[in-house]
Length: 223
Length: 164
Image (cartoon, rainbow over all chains, first blue to last red; front, side):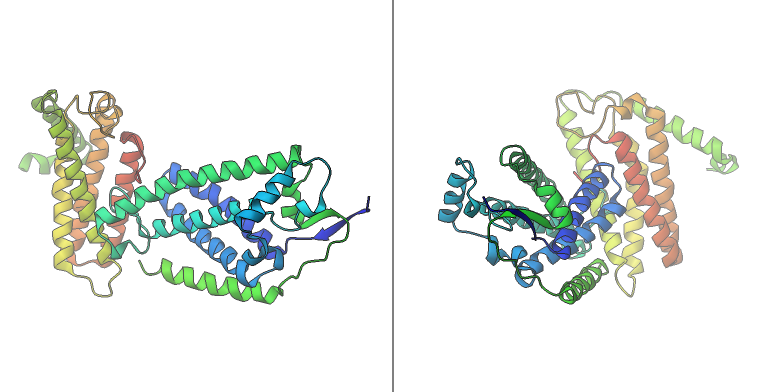
C-alpha cells in the first residue's frame, strides 16, 4: 500500500465557477418562487456568465476542467461503472479529476443550464412587464412559450441536481470519497504515483471572465 | 361626474369599491353552462393586457419614442384595467370544474381584490397622462408602478406567480 498524499486537482477558477453556479441556482430558484423578478434577472445574468465561463474553461482551462480530459465514450464509462463497486481499491477506477459518470453529469448540467439561461433571455411574464433582455425580438406569445420552456427545463435541472447530490452521497458513504471538500479546497488524497495535472495561468481566467462579463452586460443592455 | 369631483380621495375609493361590489352582484354567479366561455374570455383579456404591456415596454428601448403608439397602448391598458373587475363573476374561480388560475382569494376577499384592481387602474391612468404629456421619465415611473401593481395582485389573487 503506497502512502497517501494530497494532490491539487481543482484550480480556483473551476471552484469559483462551481460554487457560483450552486449559489446562483439557489438564488434564481428563490427569486422565481417569490416573484422577485428584478433580482431573478440579475441572478440570471450571473448564471449566464458563470456557465459561459465554465464552458470556456472546459476548453482553455486547467487539465482536470477540460472536457477533452474527462469526457469518455460509452465503452470507457461502462468499464468504469463495472469497476466502481468491485472489491478492492483500484486506483485506475478513480480518475484524478471528474470520473466518466461525473462527466455525464457535468455535460447534462452545463447543457441544461445553458438552455435555461437562453430561454430566460427571451421569456416574457404573464403581464408583459417583466421580461428577458432579448424578448423585444419575439412576440408576446413566443415570449410566453419561452417562459413555459424555462419552467419545464427547470424541472429537468432539478432531476439532474438530485442525481448529482445522490452520487456525491454514494461516493461519500459507499466509496469513502469526499468530493465536496475537494471542490472547496481543491485537493484530493491519492494513493500511488499520480502526475500533477496542468493548471492554466490565472491571467487567462481573468481575461476570459472579463470578456464574458462584458458580453453579458451588453446583452443585458439590449433591452 | 360632478359628484365624483367633489369627493375626497378616501370617498372615491369607497365609491369604487361599492361600484365593484354592485357590479359583481349585477353580473350574478357564473352559470355552469357559461363558465368555460367566461374563463376563456378572461384569459383572452389578460393576453391582450400582456400583449399591450409588452408592446409598450418594447418601445422603451428605442432612442426615439413613438408617442402615438405609446398613447394608444396606454389608453388600451387603462380601458382593460377599468374593465378588469367585471371579468371575475362569482363562481368563475378554481374549484368550479374549469381550468383557471384565478385564486379563490378573489371572492373570499372582494374588498382586497377591488382595491388591487383600483391600484391598477390608477397606475394605468398615470401612464395615459404621462403618454399624453410626452413625459418619458413619468412614463417609465408609471410603467414600473403598473408592473408592480400586476405582480402584487398576482401574488395575492393568482394561483401561480407571474411567470407560469
